[in-house]
Length: 466
Image 1: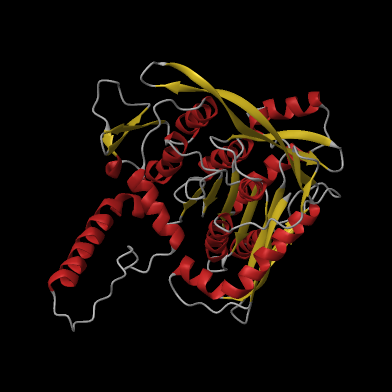
Image 2 (image 1 turned 45 degrees about the vertical axis):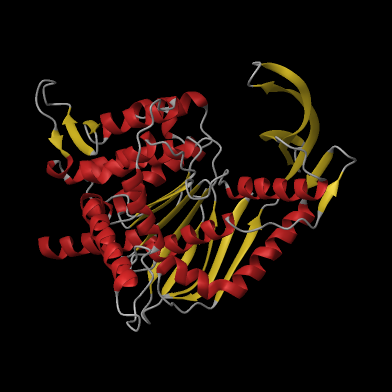
């Protein structure tokens, strides 16, 4: 199941329908609305994750099973669209901290090929007496097993188990399970705030200045509180000290909070360790180290006994990559990563390595929403997707991977991809079109915007040399 978000007459974007699946890629000109759309999608996911789900349409299969099927899914879709229609201006203001005109904002669940079942059972557990240190009686508690049902294949897939420390009635149980299943559909797990990460195009500068920003914000907050406590009663005071004095959008402000609250995980999961090793070996050629609140970089070429380099003195490449290192080594497991302008500060050869990292992040179970205006990055991603979706024999594919210096980890495994091209129009608006993967001829995604630019360069060179 995929999530489709539609918007019309929003900023310079006349109309766009964006489907979020495993990997969503935005390509296009500067100032064509890619970042604008990414920030809107980020804020929309937060809004939807905090919505109260409907309980209408839930089917009871006896006393021990509930089915959240197509009827319930359609009711949820209706609830979301009613909410968006009524609150779209408020939602936009919460995201951008500015009133921006918006025509239509809507949501659809695409490919409803999966419904959800819940098996309810009673489990007896012992109640411990802390004074005696022993089980004094057995208590009956509820356990719910949530599974997804593939409608087409008629197969089940386990999704979650919930244990209750009390016995909720049927009405409360339906609501609690609806909330859990809704977050599963959105791929948000339990905590919305810790599942989304937005990496803005200006991440390097924000990272270097984040401490100073928050120090200044706290100083302003103290001044505001002082005026409120001791100032003239007739004096007008802006009581909003939420940290948006500089007009930051929600995603950018959340990124600053991510930097401020970063805590390194004591034991990094194996799949994250492999991703971090890839970054160290193929992108930054060294290690990012943490000493208290300070960050240092140790290049592979630097002897072990040499002093590490403070991050602010390291190259722009290292500073650019450090936020994703933090995302993989921190305490939160981010399910969505919005990565704006992924080619920033990267040499064309390093852009190829970044494209490999993006594919590996998707394979790790994260949903990646990525933007680029680099023809090199777009072409490299297209090549990896051509390999991923090819109908070559296993032997032929392995031969190509060896010749290209790649591995099977650089190919998408059972992932859905959507690619959108943003093009500036003569009237100042932006056109957003979905590009389809072309199998005949087998060229993948035709980024005609980049092709035209390259043709112009070749034509210019031809004129100069002839």
